[in-house]
Length: 227
Ligand SMILES: Nc1nc2c(ncn2[C@@H]2O[C@H](COP(=O)(O)OP(=O)(O)O)[C@@H](O)[C@H]2O)c(=O)[nH]1
Ligand SMILES: [Mg+2]
Image (cartoon, rainbow, N blue to C red):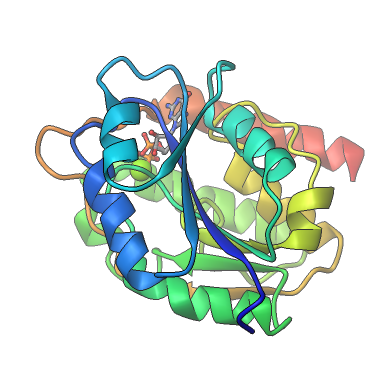
């Protein structure tokens, strides 16, 4: 196993309050993994903090999480890609099990499932809960899946997945696109239940519930016409 390469990918837009802890937590959980922070035009010094914490920092000018994920998968060569947010809402302790499932070939994608544990009590925005359930039902119905969490930001993918996934999303539709892509192509998806926690005080979400929610629904419709 030791010659396998795992990377941790952290898309960041103004995460100065939390990025140091995220980098250090994942470093501790996966000591051999290279950690990349992809800075998406942050103005709060996220890049310097991430570099000091031990991450390799790269810059993505095109704004949006989907644009960042597309660049990360294209630029980086690895056997296992772990993606997480820079906002310290996802537990690094789950990463080794997710890595194991990818490197053993048991899964092409592993989703950190928030919705089967703490999400509905930790997340303070009721609409997010409703949106997550709605998207879950929609995607599982259309693509005959049984996934528990479609839009989680913590996930792992294989080299094949990273290098073949087309990533047409520019923003927060990217996780939904990954789930649909995997279901449509019959890839093996595993879920690991994780303890989600809300953003700490002073850290602000970049997601606009209604605007981004509509974009996710439009993406599902668009993918339906492609796949
Ligand atoms: N909104 C936004 N987030 C980005 C962008 N690029 C990277 N991100 C990161 O994507 C992750 C998820 O965003 P977040 O606001 O936490 O969404 P939430 O988890 O649904 O509340 C965070 O680590 C952001 O810093 C971007 O252009 N816009
Ligand atoms: Mg987040």
